[in-house]
Length: 331
Image (cartoon, rainbow, N blue to C red):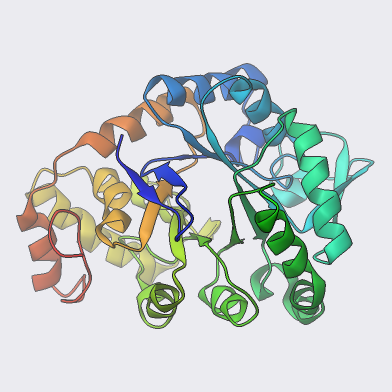
């Protein structure tokens, strides 16, 4: 599988990685055995980059991922900013969790919180290394009015902890993992980041990251990993977008793209999966399959050859702007 460099670190990751949210039971009823099978099937298909977080099933995703990866060849990203504390929540489905571990989260983006979370992550994983460390969900989408306080913690001391872990070799790369362009722009102002994990903002359906964020990242030497390439499912035939029911205008644009895909006999999901990699700043896309069957579909979609005429018609119809890079053509 093709690999690309993360920032200027020398660390290379596969252009197709595995997102670990469903492994923790996020928005899906997935048994531990099925979750392990997903990781093992990904490894068998040549995938070596995996992503997880304490938030996913309150540690459940980390535990499954670590057990599956232990003793194998892998590149792993994990996240800090949330500490797990004993005691389950009263209603896990309030957080989209099915059968999580008996913990709840406490937000802490300070130096001590980052260091504690990093050590906790290693213990939950049962692994001796994490390659890429992200500050998770630092932004108004998650924290609302509390974000200013959390971001100040990251600015004043949390970033120093992450940089220290990078300088000492405990991790190879650092960044933030969010769903917001603005959060990434803010982060660029407080430190030297290798990579941002950005979910949903650079997809076949939405390219808002091109306006200001991507040029700023290129200037800073910060690469992008694209999470959520299917925009929460709407680009694989579901009616969900941004973790909620898609509004009419999003449904209409999706139908426009799907019509063009039908004309060129291109699976819409294959185009959605491959599209972000047309940009040279993007190192990897990491969908989160909900079962082994979905993973096999993803592997198949990633191998589909998409004709240049498909991308050109999207431009001709104004669905993609003329300057948006596409796979196999311009970068």
